[in-house]
Image (cartoon, rainbow, N blue to C red; front, side, top):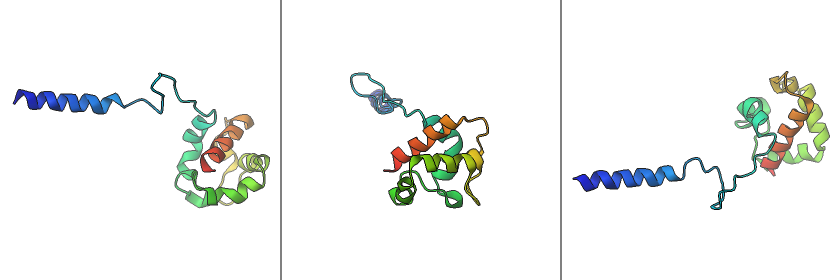
Length: 113
């Protein structure tokens, strides 16, 4: 019966070995993180991941194509000013700079193409 415990421990070790890799290559390089990812995760994710209140879902190119065609500057302006009735000004991130919001928009675009 001891060998069953050893096999279980080896299996758990194998499963945990892949945890925390976050896409890093086998050479140990860490995957590049988009500079807008943190703002997106903290302030945009709650609506844009699920499409709440008409928010275009990140990862859905059909939802973004027409918006992207208007240009990134227009998207950033809409983010800053808000889009009634669902998108509040600055996406409820009053402390985010215009640059941080632009990076979050860029992140969403990159993930939706």
